[in-house]
Image (cartoon, rainbow, N blue to C red):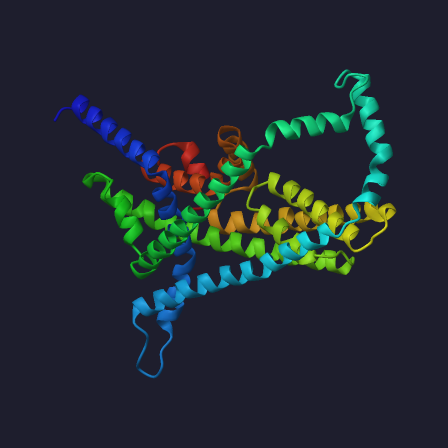
Length: 365
């Protein structure tokens, strides 16, 4: 087979793989989520494998099952804590005195309407409330609610299938540690098998450290935000801290989203328990200040530690990569930027080791 034919065949194979990945993207997603869970769970399996009772120890598949059960219990425990808090928050919001809220917003709404009329966003005799109601009625209809109901049912069915599939695949990835990576090796030509094994081995090592570090970062952020808000007497501090910590998965943009959610939840809770409207501004400043303090610790201590010790990359390097990924693929790109960049660096180290640029960015791997 000559070079041109080999290139054509390789291009066709790559295109076919890309098409299948797109066509069965939901299954690919399940596999990738399971792979991440298994990477995080493998250290736990190894720890359980070391436990001995005299000369007897649990079989490997039992330890894999125990590790999966621990993962399920931890996730289920978080859900069992958060869901009642959200339900309680909804109940508290329903108790807000809407008449008082309306009276307090009357002057700001009048000022807003005057501003919109002044700059021709509204006609002079057209009220702001009328425009909102008109647009709301044009969007909300019986068909809309029927679509929402159908989508909720579809989501529930897909969620059940997705959770079952992820757990099933995760168990086998935990039981057979190399199963996922051996599957990737099947897609690599035989003459590159040695390089492929090295790439996968290094990727698993660095990604495992990254995901564990990320989990530690989220836990610390939830603790810092929740503790800070509790000290200042903010209601529903843990719920705000939980969402604030989880949003940190999104680099740079996440803390802003978390702070906005925190302000909304905190304000609604404060008003529902009879807080004075004049004190809302102080509450908002308190929540934003707490988020700012926690994220200062995150940016100055946690993130440099995670990036330096897990993926072996300079913080400025990571910042540029995240910005580029965000401009290319939005929020999803920002979330996946660091794991993807880590793998790309490892691949470049194996195949482009003569490049001075590659030598520089991979010198610590």
